[in-house]
Image (cartoon, rainbow, N blue to C red; front, side, top):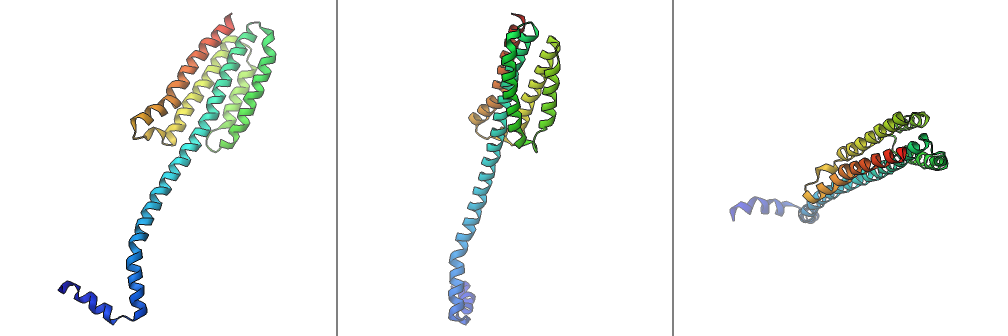
Length: 193
């Protein structure tokens, strides 16, 4: 046991207080190292959860705005085609859309809410049925792309689990696009019936 001899010589030269301190440090060091790596892993997971939560909150607002714009598009199609009874519903829908824009202001450091609102205000003033439908559709398509970009920005598509990846792809890409295609059909029918 010659390899321990330098350690025992050093230990024998130390005072009682220093021996206790050295023993305490040698016992506590593995726990501190383990705690550090556990904390680091926990903190990284917490950041990921916070990021995903923020993405889902923003996506929820955008999807709600898309839904309301689809309804507005259909109502405008009917109104511009002569259904004056839609005016009351249009005003109600525009109040809902304005409320969503107010809620989106809390995310103005992430998305350009002013640009979206300006585009919406431009659409409201257009009285040509085809142009109104086209501009509604372009804004909705932009919002669909923005929703997908948000998921990419926050790293939601980086899931290692295949099931989670497909769920996220469905939520942020496939289902909103299916909904938009159905909304287009509904808008066309409302405008021409």
